[in-house]
Length: 226
Ligand code: NI
Image 1 (cartoon, rainbow, N blue to C red):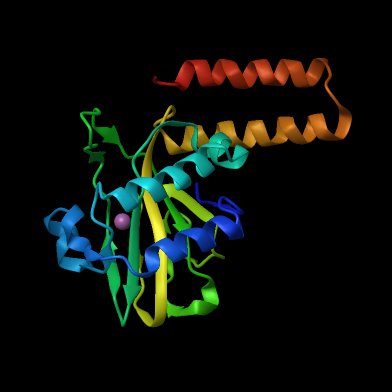
Image 2 (tube, rainbow, N blue to C red; image 1 turned 180 degrees about the vertical axis):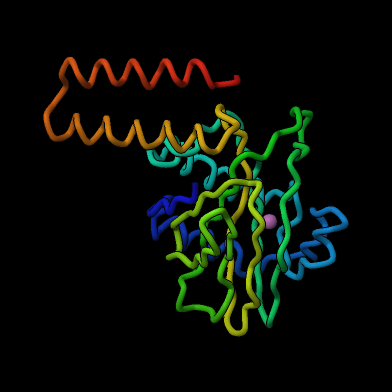
């Protein structure tokens, strides 16, 4: 399931981050990929574990975890420290898949990448090209969102970032391990949760909403791995 999550970061937070990223030293993006990714990845990113990446990453993680739509759609168990990247002058990241298991810094256990997240930090009119293209069972999806918005999609998807032919595309990206590994089950839970909330908003709490909420939690209990 792909989902657009609007307003993860406020305009103020985006502006603060952009100021901090303005004069930073980006390194070759191939530092964090395996041999397959290294052949197609042409961009720059903040050094993994650098103080700036850690500080801005905290802001991104906290904003995502506080967003009800992120929580209900991803059901995050663990969230990897966010990365930050920049594409200019034709840089791109060709078709690839992300590794399933990501090591974590600071002695933390490895994380299984279930859901990929990109948080856009440049406005769409600041650059040409640079669409995130995700291929799934329903076709090919091109994504280019306002600064502060996020897209979440299954980490197993084949995807690419098209060449940025003018301007600069800055984004943060990360992986999460979900309490519910299977994308189809996670999508069912999200749909059920969304409809329960709509029912509650329209008609208030009732025996039906309580019963359906119980059903939701029983499915979560059946499927969650924590
Ligand atoms: Ni990727």
